[in-house]
Amino acid sequence: MPEILIINNAEPGITKFADPIIKIVQQTGNKAVFIEYADCQMINLKAFDGVILTGSPQGDDIVEHHLSYFRWLKTYNKPVLGICAGHHVTGYVYGATLLRSQEPESGDFEVEIVRTDSLLYNLPQKFTVRQMHNDSITLPNEFELLVTSNTCKNQLMKHKNKPLYTCQFHPEFYNHQLIRNFIMLCVN
Image (cartoon, rainbow, N blue to C red; front, side):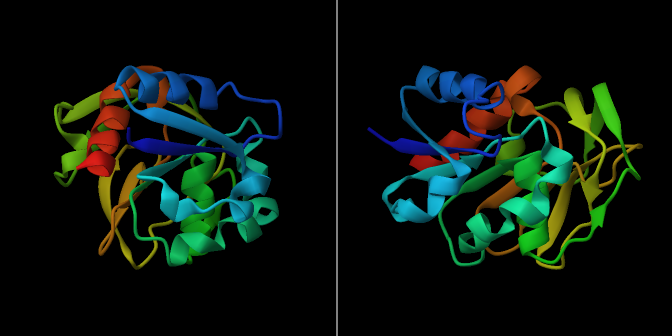
């Protein structure tokens, strides 16, 4: 059975972003393995078919604190999906600039696909997403923009040479298809 590793970016015991992701992974017939962010250096990441980095209620303030736990993202070549705080940390690992409170969004917002990709299969050109952030990131040089919005330019990006995706929004609330598409990338 394929295994997807869910790394919780929230502080230990806070699983409100991880729980819906675990449920979606299990609904696809795959095994979800859950760990806290501080434990990701003690686990064999290559043993998993893919990795999802969750959001965090303190997502806008964790980048520098969590950065040392995620340096492995530079050399990891299996599929990764970073969500909100996972988007920020991944971007920062790759040289993005953190835009402090320049593109805040809270609530439901419309985003638009600007480049097709298998991660976006069966999603309309424009769709509504759940947002919960004050900060955002610039697009790192090694990434291409897939989804944008009027409020926040970098909504979803993909590494140019490997299956590394991150999104500013929270697909675990409305956009389960995106997570299912990611899982398909992991198990194929």
